[in-house]
Image 1 (cartoon, rainbow, N blue to C red):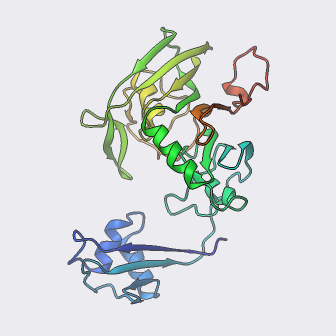
Image 2: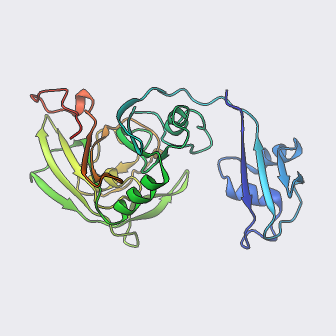
Image 3: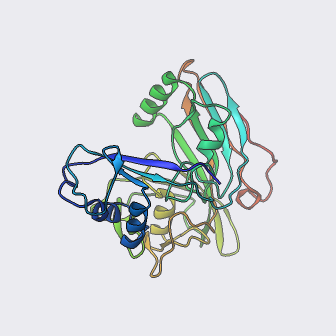
Length: 306
């Protein structure tokens, strides 16, 4: 069991005039209005430093906090491997099933961020991997590294390559997917990201590595980094990830869609290339994929730094 957490916010102009109960039920949709009424009555919600009531009316600029009691988090794999470490950077191998950061109200200490910061308190993740995605994740250990790596990402100087197992076998050895990605309706969450004409420009480059019996191993590099981009773009191209509970062909949610964090698919962060934030020398990091995402006849282990 963790030690609980305080969710604190500054009331914005859009929330002014709402009651505490109405605002919390609207902001945290995973809990019903009845549940929020019980939490407020138990003294878990504070407004401006004092216990709130359900009927208190919010004003812009006030401090509103939910002091959540300790809770049992779902079991997940908590181990990780260190792939690279120096004074400024840390690269680790995230296991499939472990969330990168706290998310969804379920995970707080059962996250890669918490586990890494137990050993390196100042480490900051420079990108994210979905809970069902395994592989290489880069942390910055200094402010210099954070600023420089963030700038390199914005300027397109970071190359990210993933491995995935897809349904169907692409006819072309290489192709690109450019469908825009943005929010679309989801019956359980309100909305999720998917192919959307009003979405943001997105680009993925795909290479067929190996054809199998009705499936294929592919590598995907993504100059842009939209939420769930690889899952969406491969589905949009007609090759959804094997076992993906959310995205169907066309890059849109299935008729009865699962949740983004649900697993069952195979996606792995394989390679990262970037200039080192201090030496400026090219740095390539690799994380060997799980057996299902390896070629049939390579020499493994092949993961290395160079």
